[in-house]
Length: 317
Image: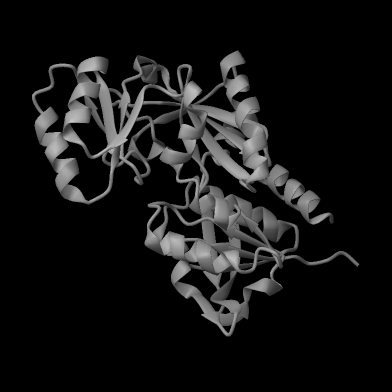
């Protein structure tokens, strides 16, 4: 008799999300199509008690009807998470203390259930810092709060990008030209907004031609899209109007993927999205990568099927 897998999605409440094009939705829907039981809980639903990890979870039903994403929850129940076959960490950034606490709690059961991506390594791989392990592929990059270092960096690179270290979706990203009169104001705003360092990079003009999102599952490339910025915009994120277009991997893209793939696999970073602008690797997204539905639409693929096929291989089912 075929085993019915129990799947838990740790994610933001679905009623708070724009589900059109949502990656987690289509992964969950494919699980339900395969006859798996799918449950939802958010990080605030986690419970550590008497050396066991629980979640106040709800069984989740998903449906794509006439192009519209639909969902419903059952009544919440406190369930032991070690009883699940797979837990997917899929809540959106920001990478904050709530996220970090969840990784610590889930780490206690990694020997009992498959957690994707591995919570220990997710915690140690925030997108804009983990990528520095592959600095030879990156644009000139500075992470600091030191104003004099930032001024020197700007003098050297002339046109720069400043962005939050733990932001997402293009939020808080500023393009500063060589003689931009707003530079000091933007710098002051970053320094006054929080106590964190932020990231400064040399501007890559090729961004006008697009920002390539490449999806890797268990270290293998399964698809890519190119995101073209809207007119008068330097951010290509689809949240801010970036247009997804069909693309393919060039020689440099393949070299980047081949170089990082063994590191991803060794760290249990199963589902990853990397961003490449021109010849440069700019981010490695491990918290909640997106883009598979756009890739599916443009290439007539079903990446969610590849996802679960590879999960079953890991479970040896």
